[in-house]
Length: 311
Image (tube, rainbow, N blue to C red; front, side):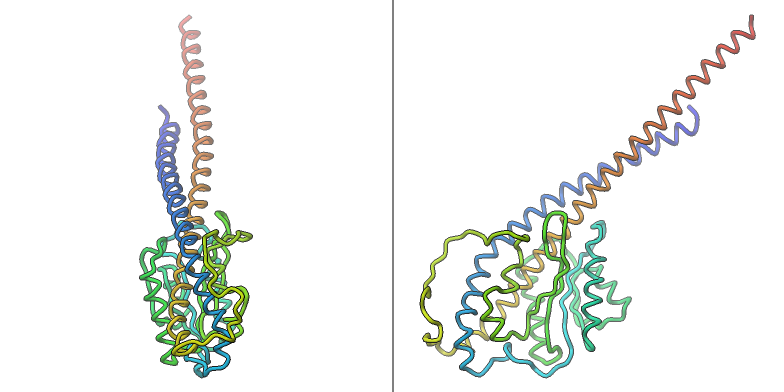
């Protein structure tokens, strides 16, 4: 067999092995993505109830001294929690988000980041951005315990006046083929934000145009004007205990969105890689058949020529 044909067969075998790997990664990413979406929907009921409670308290909070989470602390530094992936092979998932993050940070004269994910950590180290904390490992999974640690770290920096404003930058899951870099403001909150009919974190976990999750709920305060309600020991005190849960839930929702987006991007990238491998194999098989046909034709020609010479 000519060397060219042997090389083509070796290349076909190599690409076929790669295709098996990319196809397996595509299936795994797709299954994990569906799990992340289910967790995101399961979180929605608690989030909506918590936001409804804060909305209900907004008028009462106007009559009281703002608590520490509802007023500025005098620090000029902006803190951003940036969620990226630990691994590559996810198309433009990280590049688009990091470009958006760089543009957002450029608007703040003083800024620092809490970064999640190896890709983001490497990027901010290269750019010389101040990194106050970093979390790596398992970026394609989300847990409430991890969200609590990240949220508590951000709130501690805010309470210690090492950060004046806190926001979170992540890839919002729009669809299985699209992710949107998004910034959600976390601290400090304002009465206007609390009283807003729609809350940013209530939209985390819902695809574009998706209706709210249908679950049974009891409207205990339906038709009652919150301004007539009396909160003990006080609305500000209750809000001070509730807002940390609000922040941690927002971080958890963003982690779920980022994980689902990463898995969706990886599934799509692996699907494209598998399709490309199929095209390469088809082209190599065609080249192999042509080379084989050429070798057979050459052998027949040599045999006929030798027979003619014997005559």
